Every structure is written in structure tokens, then in C-alpha cells.
Image 1 (cartoon, rainbow, N blue to C red):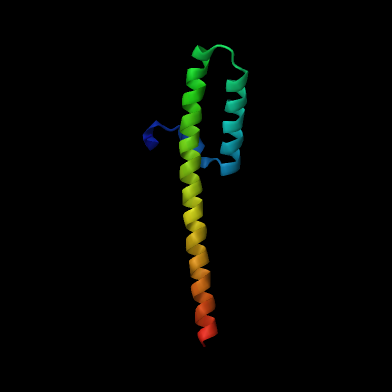
Image 2: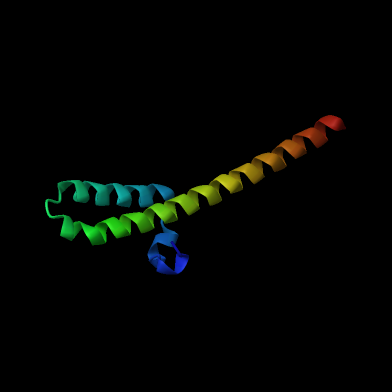
Length: 80
């Protein structure tokens, strides 16, 4: 799914907020009796999933880089 298809307001939400929104959509989908009414909600859920995935990987990468940097600093201090 392309980023251009994603609503711009999702970019500013935190992972927790996006997850809560996705859970709300899932609850509404589970309660829906008519599947024709569910198509739009399901598509929105797929878009949210993509945004959550990207934010998760970005956050994970940032944490990984910070950890590596801290480890390098500790090693340098211990070498002295």
C-alpha cells in the first residue's frame, strides 16, 4: 500500500492511538451483520495496519541505533 493512499492525520498519531483506533474498527466489524457495510471499514483497517507497521519499524530502528551508540560510548569509556 502506498503512503499517498494513507490519510495524513494518521502520521501524527502515536502507535498507541493508532492501535486503539484499529481496535475500534475491529470491534465495529465484529458487530456488523451486513458484510457490504464492512468493506470501507476493512479497507481503513488495512491502511491503519500499514501505518502501524511502518511506525513500529521506524521506532524499532531508532531504538536500535540509540542502543548501538550507547554501547559504543560505554566501550570507549572502558578502554581508557
